[in-house]
Length: 300
Image (cartoon, rainbow, N blue to C red):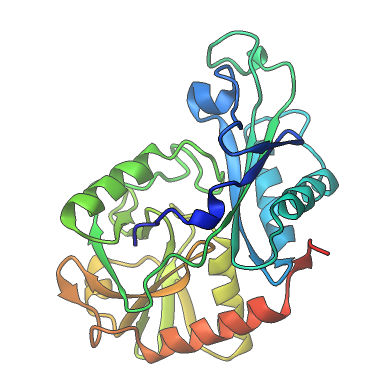
């Protein structure tokens, strides 16, 4: 689903390294590593009634990614949470909010790719927007992209980095095909994930998803795995083929932006009955219950 501008976001206050600025005045230096080479890590967070869902897991992944890229001067979790709180307060936000948390390697003393040119510490950006889950409730249409999702032999997908050109190229193919998103394969030809979400199928009552070889270990994906275990729903992590997906009874995607969303068409094949299936609906309900009762409080 294509996201749309919301008038409520017209006068957003954005936080850049602790400075609270109107969205039209906010900016980063042309010498910042994110501009120079996409050298940044990020997390997407969602605010539910004053609580951020699984904030600790998001911050742990942000820190792991930053360490993998050898960032220095990584801000503490306490500082990051404090800046999130300041940003939400400045925008008077409590619910229905998506937060884009970005940490770049920082500003360079001169342009270039060498990390030794970074001598001022990272840039922390907190962008909070009024944004309801973006995915269609009637079902998503996917097409398989020719662009492969990178594996650990190139760039480990466990690094949640901001250099996302392969995902953007896949999304362009989906747009041209009139689809909602693109399904991406790994280097071996197995299903990895979509250009924006993790991917699941359901066959004979068993929920299946790709092994995290060339896909991000998504926080929402992890919540789905936990919900299956807690509710005795059969689950398998395995190498999935397109043929298995074409013949599935149900399919759905998971992610912070869109939560859980059913997939009803893949490469022109109707999935199941052409509407989101019953197990997808059950897991969606369980996920909504989870977000309604858990999370880290960040607003007064």
